[in-house]
Amino acid sequence: MNIVAVIPARYESSRFQGKPLQDICGKRMIERVYLQARQVTEFEQVYVATDDDRIYTACIGRDIPCIMTSVNHKTGTDRVGEVAEKIPADLYVNIQGDEPLIEPATIRAAITPFIENPHTPIHATNLMTRIHDPVDLINVTVPKVIVSRDGRGVYLTRSAAPFPKSSIEAKYYKQVCVYGFTPESLRFYCNSPRGAVESIEDIEILRFIEAGYHVHYIEVDSETIAVDTPKDLERVVAYMKEHNIS
Image 1: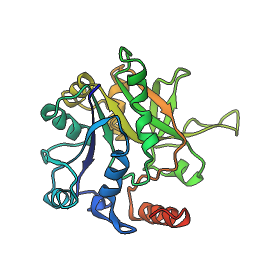
Image 2: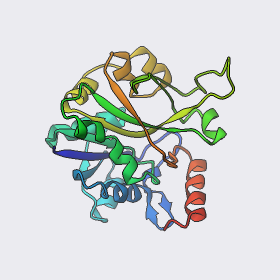
Image 3: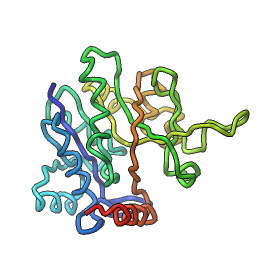
């Protein structure tokens, strides 16, 4: 199976401009994500996909394969879709460029269902991890995940859900932004308008769920921290120093 990983990266961000190029203990954030992804041996290649010359130049200067894509893409998955038009593969893995702590084993979990059962009816995979930090539960930049018993995605929301009406022992899960896509599912996404709920929550994977596509969730034990704001970056740096990560 030919598997290609793509790390979408854009410079402009309303919450944190230029975050892919932020220094994290001596390395750019996008470089840290790339180095983690390169450790997944099943990947034929790992590319950064961007629309910004500054990110492109930084990547090429660090021997990171980088593909320039359109400035008109609204989501990272759209950017992956353009790469898929240029680079043929059996499976594409979208790894968010703002998760510098993402573990290689966590990334690999997104491709496991496709490898173990190449004839699976799953259209896409996504990861989730148990929420232990109350800050993540109330943080609107952290999508919470609700799944069926067999792991099929039911809903994602920025709210603290499900609501613990009858039990305070509720378990909460947050999305880990690694996705596995078949070429067919990518084409669907890139050629379909936003759904009503996706537009409200602004969570791109909802486009598949709203349309009835099977998005399979894999639970992982991950301490990843998505960097959406400068405050998140401070949390990452503090975590790395606490755990002696170079």
